[in-house]
Image 1 (cartoon, rainbow, N blue to C red):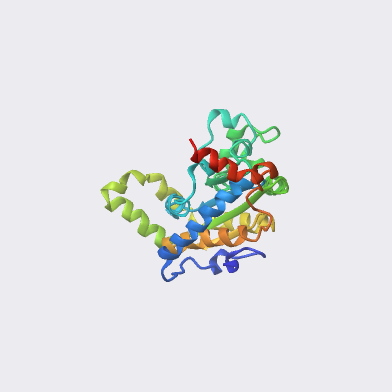
Image 2: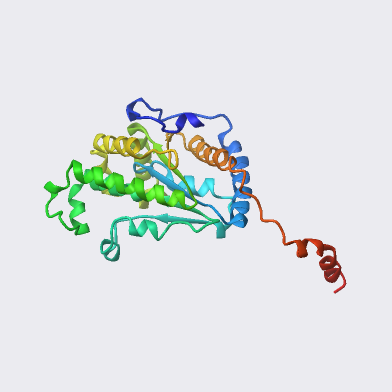
Length: 283
């Protein structure tokens, strides 16, 4: 699965949006079981946190991927955060604040459904949103220029470097959806009554900005894929295959950490295990 890791600059137009893996559902079932077992060990070990970042265009399949990939996790070991439009309180802080306080504790997985990258994606497509952040020295949209974005990317890189150096293992997945498949999924939302609630007229407005979003995603991925916080471009047109790829990438990468082990019992406790069994059996 390493061929989906971004290790040098990419052009999204040259990346795949559809890969169909045979028996993807069956393979996912086994892989997520292994992930769930590894998550128990990571929880017991208590020295690493795992941050999983999911980005993609509307209908890319983020919600269903979370549901299927993390199905076998112990509920206490995984937390999912979905970042919407910033609240009034969040806007009174810097843009990374709400993401920082949502980071997983050591021993836990944290899943960001949309992430801190919204701050260099949606805001870049709609720079007027930046004015709501009330940043000192940024008094007009004209000041949201190349230098502004360069600084923001540097801040995000520093943020990720800091948490990585302090024990957070970072996975960033871009669910790479084709425009044609997005059209099909939007139509399904309209055609199936039980899916109507997912549709918003705003989806069509954002769809018209598809090319601009692709340019912004490409730039963000190229500027921020680092060895300690790599991006993976996951072909997303086939949902079962995309889910399996994400699970497999995480399992393979996490399995390389040889120091992640369940803690050893205290010597006194270990030497008295038979005694404890007798006490229980003799109740």
